[in-house]
Image 1 (cartoon, rainbow, N blue to C red):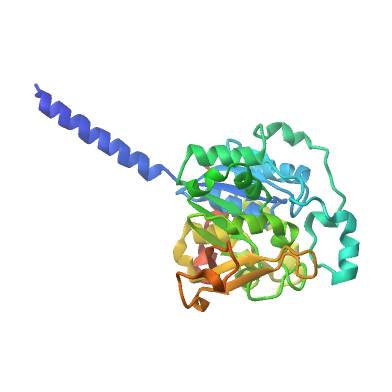
Image 2 (tube, helix red, strand yellow):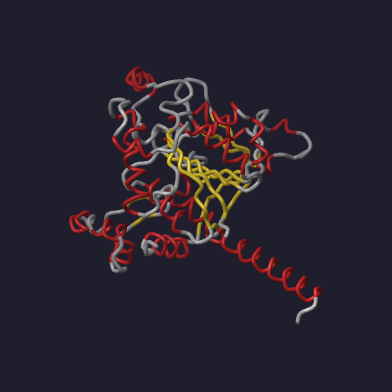
Length: 359
C-alpha cells in the first residue's frame, strides 16, 4: 500500500506532466484581420496559419479593402468550411469603409489631380451592402469589439495580423486604448518603404485605402510591430516551379483548387505572380525565414494630396542622440521591417502548409 507521501508525489508529477503536455499543444494565439477574397493572398495566409501546428487562430475579422464586406463573408465562410474544414473558427464582420469614409464618389477627381491609381480594390466596383446567405454563419457582434474582448481575455498572448487596411484595429484602440499594452505583437502587410507604391506612385494599396487608420496603429505603442512591405512582397515570385511542386501532392480541396488553375501556366509557362500576405504568415510560423529585418520609425502621409497614403521609413541610424527624438516625427514608434527572406525555406513551408491534409 502506497504511503500518503508517495501518493502526493505521484499527484504532483501527474499534474506537472499534464500541464507541460497542455502547454505543448497550446498554439500561439492569433487574430487575422483581413480583406478576404476568393482564394486571394489573404485566404492563403489564413490557410497557412490555420494549418500550422503551433498556431491557434482565435478568429477572422473582416474590413473593406480588396472588396466590400458582403463578398468577403462569402469568401471567408467558403475558405473555412469547404477548403479547411474549420467552421469552428469565428468570422466577424467589421468596418464597411475607411475611417474617413468611402472616397469612391470623388476618386475620379483624385485621379485627374494626382494621376491614375493602378489597383483600386473595392473601389473598382460599386459598393455592396446587402449581406449574402452566408452571413447567418457570422459570429455575432462587430469585429472591433471582438478584437477588444479577445485581447482582454488573452493578455500578452495575441498576435494580430493586419492583412488589409488597418481600419478595425485603429477603431479598436481608439475605442479601448487600454488593449495596446495587452497585445503581444502586430504584423502588417502593407506599405512601400524604399520603393514606389503599387496603387499610386507613392502609396501601397492597403495604406492608401485608409491612411488615417494605419497612421493610428503604427503610432500606437505596441510592444512589437513587424511590417512586411511591398519592398519584399514584390521580390518573391510564384512560378510554374512552385505550381508543379504542389499539384503532385495528395489530393485535398486546396490542392485541387491549385490544379484547376493549370490553364494559366499552359497558356504562359513563364507566368509570375506575387504571394503578398503569405509572407506575413511564413515569418511568424518560422522566424528563421526572415534574413533581413531593419528597425525603422515609420510614418504615413495623411495630407490629402498626391502623397496621400505614402509610407515614410526613417532609419534608426539617423538618430545620433537616442534620448532625443527630434530627428523623427513626434509620436512615431520603432517598428521592425522585413526586407528579405530565405526563399527556399519560404517555399518549402508555403507548399507544405497549403498541401497539408485536412484533419
